[in-house]
Amino acid sequence: MSGPPAVLEVRSVAKTYDPKRRAGHEPSWALRGVNLSVNEGDTLAIVGESGSGKSTLARIVTALERPTEGSVLYRGETVSGRRERDLRDFRRRVQIVFQDPMSSLDPRMKVHDILAEPLRSLGLVDNEREQVRTLLASVELPDSAAARYPHEFSGGQRQRIAIARALGPSPELLVADEPVSALDVSVRAQILNLLSGLVADLGFTLLFVSHDMAVVRHLCRSVMVLYQGEVVEQGPTDAVFKDPRAEYTRSLLDAAPRIRHRRERGDASS
Ligand SMILES: Nc1ncnc2c1ncn2[C@@H]1O[C@H](COP(=O)(O)OP(=O)(O)OP(=O)(O)O)[C@@H](O)[C@H]1O
Ligand SMILES: [Mg+2]
Image 1 (tube, rainbow, N blue to C red):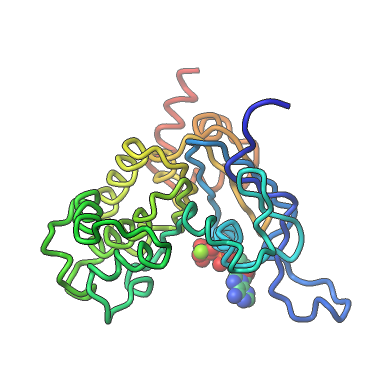
Image 2 (cartoon, protein in one colour):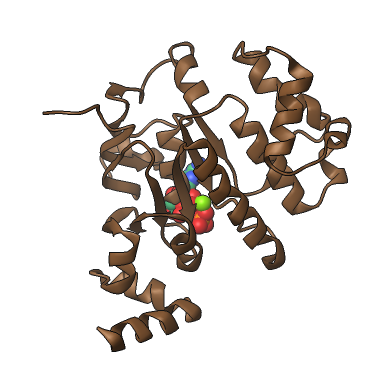
């Protein structure tokens, strides 16, 4: 054994929301037998169709939900099942961005407070105005945004605000659950470029949830494919695109026309 433990490790995680579980019925599993290891600086995509368990996994690795079975370790320490008061340090190190920036931002709060709130609650305020200004600049929003409310912004701008809020505590791991799926196609590329620039500049580890293989190729070095709650494929993005092992991965790739085109060209030249 050598080197530091993985940033994030998921061991044999299963999750059911089925209330009949205790009555001895076979429950329906949102996740089953999921294993996952993410190292420092990795950019890992979790891909699958609607209902495959992506968001469930995102909530479990961020300790917003508990696994029914199995465990989640952060830098070698178990976090699943910990009480909230024992998660303080974890809450600073691991941040999440949700799909819909309208419901994830409190409409009654000004952007200044939306960005400052996590810093306050985690005791990270130094010069609040300056910190908010820096966060806004990091997502390419002007200082004047601080005095406004979420509804005064477009969807893409609101997602920038949500990203800035998540970056406030300088997380080591950012989990993004379909951060561009609710946005107009025209602004998706801007937000994805922003995210990839932030990964390059700030060096955080990224777990990126998506149902869109085209997006994944752009942003993530490795990919894990979920199908009905189980991992059906895992590997470097290039290898998975070039030579997908699972039938289901092939069908996902075939659902993305532009990628199929590239794949066919790749296949022809090899
Ligand atoms: N809070 C909940 N209560 C009951 N069932 C749930 C809950 N959350 C998720 N599920 C079920 O678990 C399964 C996985 O759902 P999940 O939301 O994780 O999928 P997803 O891959 O994120 O889908 P989408 O692409 O639509 O966001 C689904 O069958 C869903 O109905
Ligand atoms: Mg989801």
